Each structure stands twice: as structure tokens, then as C-alpha cells.
Amino acid sequence: MYHPGSRAPVKLWDLEFPNPVGIAAGMDKDALAVDGLFALGFGCVEVGTVTPLPQPGNPKPRLFRYPQHHAVVNRMGFNNAGAEAMAQRLARWRKQIGQRAPGILGVNLGKQKTTPLEDAAGDYLKSFSLLADLADYVAVNISSPNTPDLRKLQGSDYLGGILRTLNQANSERVSSGKRKIPLLLKIAPDLDQEQIEEIVGTVIDCAWDGIIATNTTIDRSPPYENLEKQGGLSGQPLRERSRQVLRQVLRATGGKVPVIGVGGIETADQMKEKLDAGAALIQVYTGFIYKGPGMVKGLIRA
Ligand SMILES: Cc1cc2nc3c(=O)[nH]c(=O)nc-3n(C[C@H](O)[C@H](O)[C@H](O)COP(=O)(O)O)c2cc1C
Image (cartoon, protein in one colour):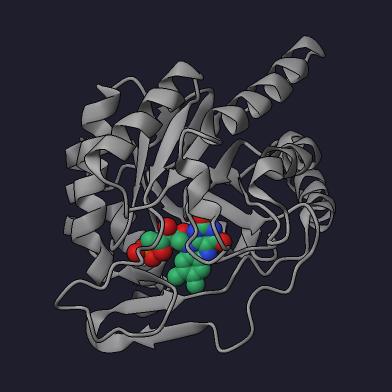
């Protein structure tokens, strides 16, 4: 229950989120605007997706607006300056703010475009090793539609291996006296019930800490068949699908794993729809593009 005027903090894992509203991954891929995003009121900023090495992403144009639908299609393709550059920037930021962190910082990790799927776990591990000390939580992105075959990592051939690799790295942290980093998996909306149950089963078996549902969709079912640009669709056209996946994930977890709800949130009612369904926190991106900075405080007040 969120009371008007309260800051509605949310305790999850060993973290206290000042409010349940976060900025989703992809807005600040290189952690360039962390302070600014917190200043707008976000309780959580998820930076990235970052890959081990810098990469240019797809050729431009790669981002398209459909204002009549409050939607965006993007095929950015993980353009970013690499994990090392992000680590340096976040280390400076942590030093600057000292103990006064304005909110929770998540770091979202991806696979290099050129890394074969068999070696994907190694990519996540490299970035985790560079960034875990600087992150409050780490999200693993296996659900962007814009890195060829990335979504295959959601399948049973690869998923368990990736999750166990980072568990091992986390255990080594704990053995050396460091904190265990909450590990979250970000999933696609384009999954059927069986795939969702399998993924949730793996997350629970591997004792991962949370799920982020969802990334953008490649679906263009009517009435959105005319949004013809290739890439991931987000914003209002994603909302219903994202809501269904959130419900399916929550049912499959049986409340055992906190879920962050993302996809098509623009108004307080849309935020409440996800929180009332059982999401522990929410994130926004496309709604923020259309509504602008004032949106954040509006959502928090609500
Ligand atoms: C331009 C753009 C870039 C994105 N880049 C990333 C990314 O790098 N990593 C990621 O996990 N999600 C990325 N996303 C997906 C968002 O984090 C979010 O999951 C999705 O857009 C659904 O939320 P929304 O409808 O509020 O935008 C991106 C979305 C957009 C619009």
C-alpha cells in the first residue's frame, strides 16, 4: 500500500529502494547520467546494457518513434563504451557520493555481438568481475532482440550455465569477505507459458534473486502490424503483453522470487496495475520519453 506523500521505500534483498520507480536499462548505457536520473526522483537507476569490450552497435538510424501509439522501436544493438570504462566512471561516482547514495544502482550486462553463444557465460562473467563491486544489483540481459541469437540464451541449453557461472563468482566474493550481489534475469515478452515456466524453474533452482519482466517485443500482431521498423517495440503496444508475462512469471514463481515489472508504463494507473499484480518494483523507459522528467515525481506521488 502506497500512501500519498510518503516516499514508499521498498526493501528487497539487502537493499532499500527509496521508492518503487526505476529507469529501465538502455537509457543510460554508459552510466553518464546517474546523478541526473536520481535527481529526477528515480529510486533506482539501471545502467547498461554494457558488454565486456566497447562496441558501436547497429548502423543508424536505429531508433524510431511512433508518437500516435506512444511507442518506440529500437535496434540499438548494445552500443556502449565497455565494462572497463563503466567501472572507472562508477568508481568515480561512488567516491564522490561516499555513503550518501541517492538510490539503488543496477548494472545490466550483455554479450558482445561477436561472442558465440557457447562462450556467452564468459562475457557475463568478465563484466561481472569488473562491475560487481560498484553495483547494488546486477541484471543479466538475455532478452534484447537486437543482438543476433541472444534470446536463445533463454533456452535450457545455455541458461543454467550462465546462472551457475555467476553464482560461482558470487560465492567467491562472499568467501573473500565481500557482499553477495543480488542477481536478476531480464526476460523477453515473446515467450510462451512453457518457456516461462522453464526459465522460472532455472532461476529458482539456481537460487537467483529476481526477474525483470519484460524487455521489448518483436511481435507486430494487429493492430500494430504497421509499426514496420525492425527491432524491439516498447511503450503502449507492449503493455498488455508485458502484463500477461508478468502474471505468468508471478504465478510460476509462487511468490518465491521478486519480479520487477517493465513495459508500457506511462501513468500512475499503469504503474499500479503492475504493483497490484504483484510486481515488487517497476521500471519505465518509453513512457519517460513521451511524458518527460515530470513523470517520475508524478508516479512517486501516486
Ligand atoms: C531505445 C531503447 C534502448 C533500450 N536498450 C536496452 C538495453 O540496452 N538493455 C535492456 O535490458 N533493455 C533495453 N531496452 C528495453 C527497456 O529497458 C524496457 O525493458 C522496454 O523498453 C520496456 O519498457 P517501456 O515500455 O517502459 O519502454 C531499451 C529500450 C529502448 C526504448
